[in-house]
Image (cartoon, rainbow, N blue to C red; front, side, top):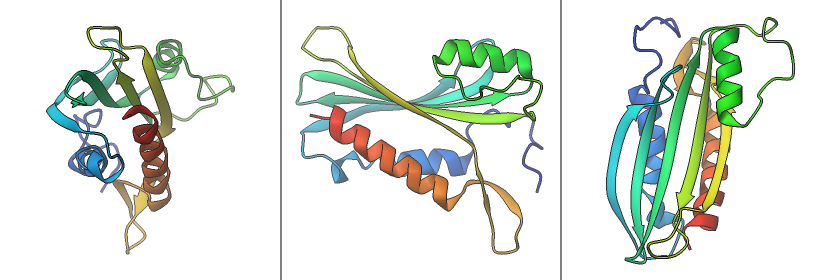
Length: 166
């Protein structure tokens, strides 16, 4: 199985959606705050870049809104990498873009929370990571996250849930 063989490789695949759902549809395991999941939906990310977002919308304490946004970005060349770096406020590489091998897959998990009722969404945290493929029992590269990457995603996500869902 090739890693980039689909015409929809920039969309979140079932394994990626399952990993995010297992974390963010089970927020109750990581916080004691009263909350309600209002919606979960998918949409395209940046118009200039290929990618997709999975968004979870919560109501906290029956009065505050919160969003968790899991985005996937499929970067095909150095022009798209410069757009991604400028739009993401985060530079992945300090090397010239022509040294990087393309395509690259990046993810962003962001948390946005309303601070006071009918107020602005000013609490904002995020983290980025690069795709690291898993390897199956036959030593074949898969389209799933590696075990190490899953642990990192879970650790950072749980920390952000605990700091934002209060």
